[in-house]
Length: 202
Image 1 (cartoon, rainbow, N blue to C red):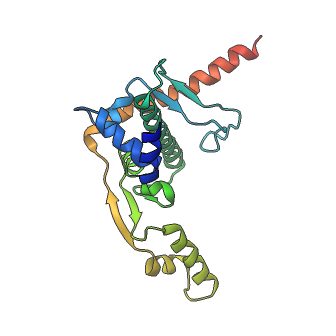
Image 2 (cartoon, helix red, strand yellow):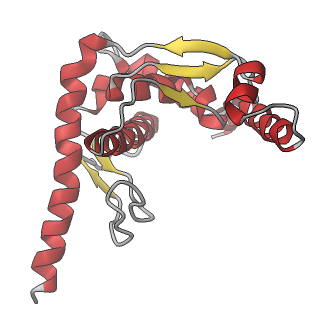
Image 3 (spheres, rainbow, N blue to C red):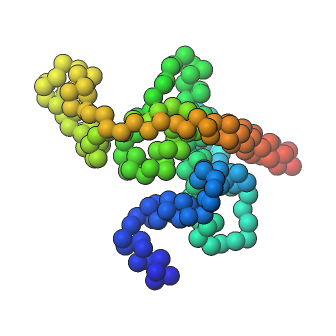
């Protein structure tokens, strides 16, 4: 326990878990470690695209093991579930006539390379990161500059003040795996609603 705490002082828990996933992945891509572990992440209901606040979170594929490997795998499956949820939202937007070919991430989670790569791989879209590490602060400055009349539009302010940093490309070789994960993801909510219907018929 003391060793674990010492590690956490030096690194964030996310950095530590990312490193541990690299240790246990062996010859597989890290994302493939969750072939038997699936998460539906709506522990507070679904805002988008289903707008169903009654939905609950689900975890399928748990074992009785409770070591660091299992914690790292649940962490990975949760990150994948968030990215699968993003894909679900994007598909709903595209079905409504919007065309989205690039994702822009900012805030704390954009500093987690695993979170960023999973979003690129699972959505199949490049992810653009800001050159400024604290990009949320730049966004606030852009809005302030617009409010003060320094720019004619928010688009002009963004072009002048916001700078593109790294672009993370999806790994196309992993597409089939994540397409299958997405199929399971959609089945999870389908099954949850089916179970609710069964119990509501009591």
